[in-house]
Image (cartoon, rainbow, N blue to C red; front, side):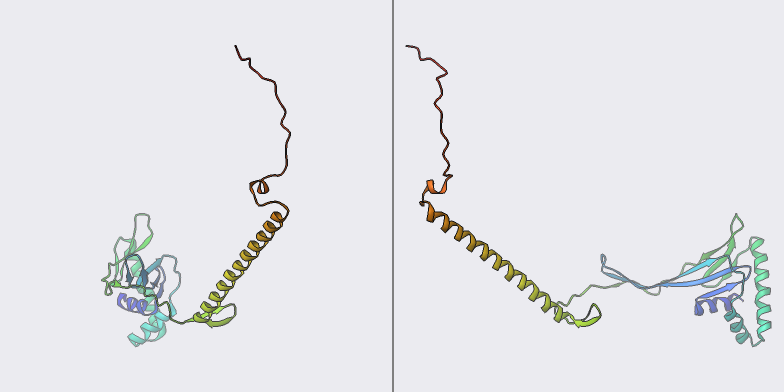
Length: 214
């Protein structure tokens, strides 16, 4: 029976057994390790929970087809096996599932799944990111689709316009400064006195604070 259950679980990724628990296989996608410049292979992880109180309908159909027995006979056969497996676990035995792991009870009386160490058929491969600066690809802007080339040209024109407007403001400020200087020197002579502050302050004569000895 373990072989049938293992085969079904590998194919369907989930299997619930009454009195024993629920098995589910999750697959993590391949992962790009940018730091090490490697592509890590995908991994399968078996998640076990002890809270299953029902029997997977697909497993009944699967065993019924392989054993060439009726559906009721297949269901009864699975339930009887689960009952005997639970009794073995209660007595401290292990229930082995070839190539995936085993069920066993811990000191607290809870059933836990011990995953079998699997052979890695896939190894990490070298992967370096290649950037094609001039490649054109589709870009979604708002609800409209355009291309990367069009957007690059758009941003280039926007940058040029900003630079041009900055130059215009700089020239305008320079011209205004020249006009102010021309107006100033038209009313004052072009000298250090003409540039300096024109306001005069009276200087009062102070009494000598010392006496010259003869």
